[in-house]
Amino acid sequence: MTIALVLVKSELAIEEDLKRFLLVLLVSICVATLPRVFSWFRQIPYTLLLVIVGLCLAAADVRLINLSPGLMLFIFLPPLLFEAAWNMKWSDLQQDLVPISLYAVVGVIISIAVVALGLKQLAAIPLITALLVGASLSATDSASAIALFRELGASKRLTALMEGEGLFNDGASIVSFTVLVELATGTNELQVSTTLVNFLAVTGLGIGVGGIIGFSISLFTQRLNLPWVEQSLTLVAAYGSYLLIEELGGSGVIGVVAVGLILGNFGSRIGMEPRTRLVVTEFWEFLAFFVNSIVFLLIGDQIHFSRLLGNLNTTAIAIVAVILARAISIYGLGGLSNWLANSQISIREQTVLWWGGLRGGVSMALALSVPASTPGREEIIANVFGVALFTLLLQGFTTKLLLKGLRLSDERVQHQKDEDIEKVLREFFS
Image (cartoon, rainbow, N blue to C red; front, side, top):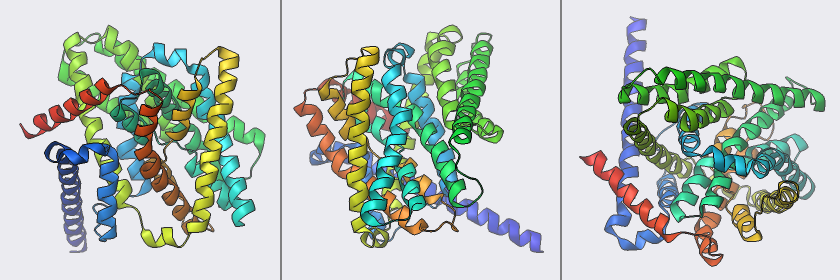
């Protein structure tokens, strides 16, 4: 009898989750159609419009869906990273490998250090709490930044730099965050040599296993000419590599990026017919559209205004620290890259990269994943959420003006983006 009751409750829970998920999709589709119906809404980037709708729902205490932070990362991060990596040309990545590596790795260290120092000195927050805030905010959310840059018609070079940094930055941020959580909970001690070895091992395992999976699938698809099977393999590769590498103790984020880069630049060329490549690319564009829609909607949905209002002073300090840290990273490391590798990243481009370094779903998920027993957990969540909201709304809204002012936007890309959204909506409703 007890087992039967448990099964009934499980079925009801699944049914309720499915209803909520469908509601999220419906709201996302409605928001996507608003600019097509009311021309005024075209002034607001679609991604930010979703955040605003999520905030309105949160203000009315309407919660669309409840997902654990780990589940949020698992559901949303692999497809977004894979789609970005699939479309990233190796030649573009290779051209800017030095600045991307500096921004993605050294930039994380700078961000953690500056934010932690600012919060400890100016807000008297305990060091470990300040470090966890810094680690959460060191993740320049790839989904937020890449979606916004594409939507606003940023230049090809800027988009490639932001995509490249976003692809590798998450891995460095998550590894750093994990080490600091272990330190905060007393399960590990901070030792520079051990931490460095652990970081290299986690990253190396992600690249190694991801590379094996990517090349194996590439060689396997050479023997096939079944578009739907090959499309399904890419989906299995995105989620499967993330799960497997995480289980092995490596960075699933880095692994997914490695698989996506190999399949997009090698596997799709040697093992897929042109029609199959088109089918797979359109499938991932379609999936990325919906996943991005859900991510941005849930960012607003997860905001708790009572938490934000109770930590306004420390949040303001964190915002200034994040902006300062980003400036040091972009201008300092950009100048270093120009000197070392002749990267030729102009001051105008560096300025857009600095201001366009948004924080979003990844930072918020990391903050929420801090164990309940960790001192200052609520303060960490409030500060991270406040900074994320500031970057998404204020910086997100003004990035378009900055791109236009610096003449780094392409209006044709914006027009093409509108046509792509209309195409996705037509396919969905057909």
